[in-house]
Image 1 (spheres, rainbow, N blue to C red):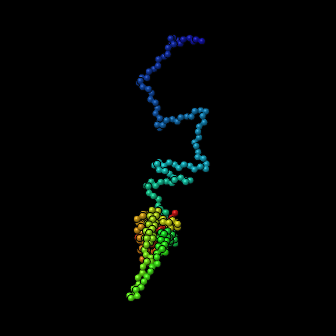
Image 2 (cartoon, one colour):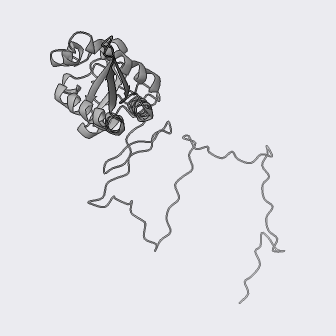
Image 3 (cartoon, rainbow, N blue to C red):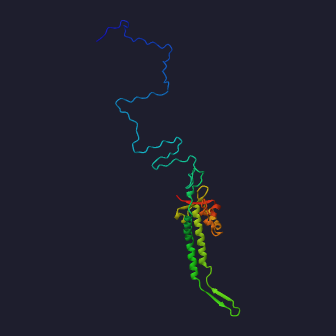
Length: 254
């Protein structure tokens, strides 16, 4: 179907568009908050609800903004010390300027039992060697001069090779006990009764060299009727004279 032409536009031309007198595009209205408008989800698609943690399961701890590992429950590792310091040793009260708690010191009876065990282990081989050396020695033969009545003896026991070997074995065993106490704080006897030799300052092992010096310093405990070995019975820190010189203590092990 045709329509009669427009009397105002007999040729059917499009009217010219009015030009912008300034030649510029109209400025767009800026977003006063500088944010992009949120996108609307399409119709017909269900939105995903935020995931809620399931019941009965532990939640993950929040991430540390400084990159340190945070500890959590159920056996997860605890927080690390940001200064890299070691936790206080067993028996030390962190709220008392590093002082050791009184119940952390080993009892006198435990130390005696540990000493007996170490003495048997160190001395059993030398004692056996001495007994064998004495039993294998030939009996002594003595003669008396009838004129001068002087008596001379030949043969008999002496300081033989077994005695020398027994002495060397005893020295080696004692040094090995010092090595154990210096590096781990426990000899055979101390490990059996669950006690430990440590430095009084920080609760750490004293080292092999100081362990040897401490064993030599036990001579001071034997000078006056072994009073030094009895000193832990009434001493507040249960120390012998050697312990006080070396600033060591014997504590209960964990």
